[in-house]
Amino acid sequence: MTSFRNKNILITGGASGIGRLMGEYMAQKGGTIILWDINKKALEETKEDISKKGGNVHAFLCDVTDKQKVYETADKLKETCGNLDILVNNAGIVIGKPFWECSDEEIEKTMNVNTMSMFWTVKAFLPDMINANAGHIVTISSAAGIVGASRLTDYNASKFAAFGFDESLRMEFRSRKMKIRTTIICPYFINTGMFKGVKTRFSWLLPILDEKVVAKKIVKAIENNRSRLIMPGIIYSSWLMRYLPVSVFDWIAEFLGVSSAMEKFVGRKEEMHTIS
Image 1 (cartoon, rainbow, N blue to C red):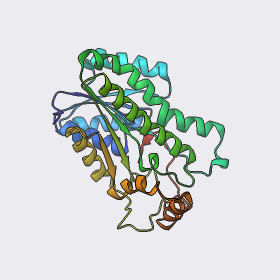
Image 2 (spheres, helix red, strand yellow):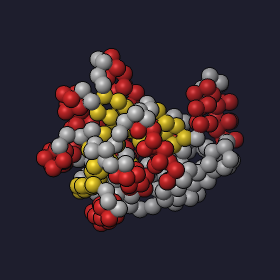
Image 3 (cartoon, helix red, strand yellow):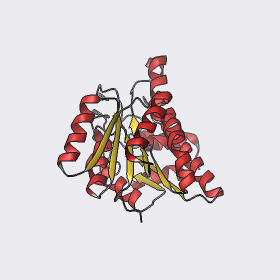
Image 4 (tube, rainbow, N blue to C red):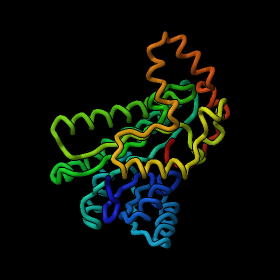
């Protein structure tokens, strides 16, 4: 079991949504919380809120799609706080349009925020973790990183990539007997506002998840050194479903409402926020 006390914990996209909640919960457990976000106002408010509750928190304005900015901010972090113990790659966006309506710029932004940013943050902090033979890399993927859905082509692609990124890192660390842990998080839609307007056909089976419950479960998973957290558990069945003919797989997805969940999607307009 991992203790958060006196551990340096970086959360990207940490100024809102589950990023902010994770920061609050881990600060309560004695962690030194380091927030990165591009929303200056929200970043300052979150830092102040965690500080008022007695938490030890630092905040840095950082565009995680800019690799040079990531490396520079990482250096500032190390100068201020020392080496990082836990990295939570949480920053993400969703466009929520049919693929043919997504502009080139929107597609590139989705991939840069949701996927490429992880390469830059891990490259920035992994050398120190390797030297210390310790550390924990947490990747916030999604149920959309396991099953494709309508109006989420770019988002699905970015989250499938995130899932593979975590799995490959885990294998590399394992093959070299490194004591660096990884955790992949794959929740269904969360009521953070990022997926405002999404609907679920069977709420008892595929519920829209509560952000506070999700954040607490993620913190618990990191604390317990779990390699994988998927919410709700029914999502695990999607791997078994892939043994079925594609037409049957697609019919089940349609019946469960997976393909129509985004039809009334509204979302929100912030530049960057937590993902679900």
